Image (cartoon, rainbow, N blue to C red; front, side):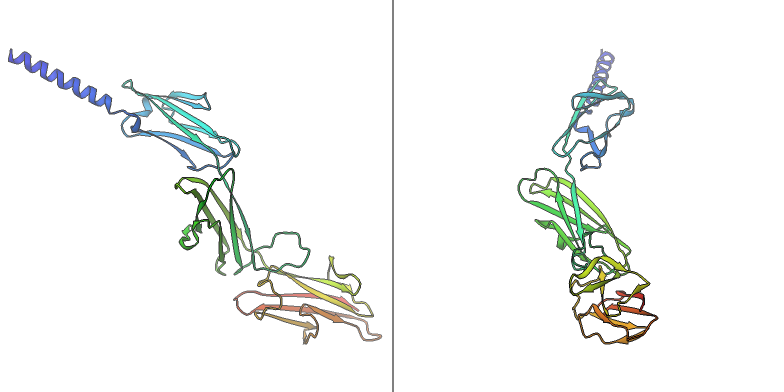
Length: 320
């Protein structure tokens, strides 16, 4: 009788542990994640299920995208898809049938919300009527603006990073722009932003890489009738008019954008001989002597005394 009672007791224990083991596979034991965690529009995304309680390698897994079965089979723990455009959502459902008979379903709705990133070298000079982007040069000042895509109701918070470092003072509510000065030691900079709503949910991420160019100078002719002829830069071999010409030196991408800044030194020279310019700082008037013919070199040197490396020069070989 005692032996029979012991057998029943141990049988009940085995049933208890079997039921307990089966009960351990619950909805919370399955984790559904995506990479990237905050995708942009029309971006490839990888969805993954994982668990520390269930053997998913032996489980039958079915993936559905927007109500359609797109992948199924034993051990199908990942699924790759492409998000839609701004304003659409991707509905992901994964059903898992484990080896112990448990059936678990996980759902995830993904609404892409990318962030456009625009940057400018806001204190750099370009001539009037210049239609291109003001490029960045070493030690110039850069401003990056984040523009979230899609509907953004209410205020937003911006978390900025530069070259992987969190810019705490520049981050926070309503701070949709970030400004910095490039170091002469850096050949490029990367800027990243994560945008979240007031509840703390991330609505999008953006990043941009900024590379630095060399400033340059171009020469133009200026006339009393038409002013500076921006459509025709002067090249070596230009012939000076016998009645005289006014040559304009226009720098591109130097800073600051005020050519008359006290930080900028201008030095004109002819045939390597420095001359004093009595007109506009970036202009020189030249008139050959009567009966004089030959060649010469006009040069301009611009130096920013507040920087280490902003020192550019340009020569123009002319005939007269």
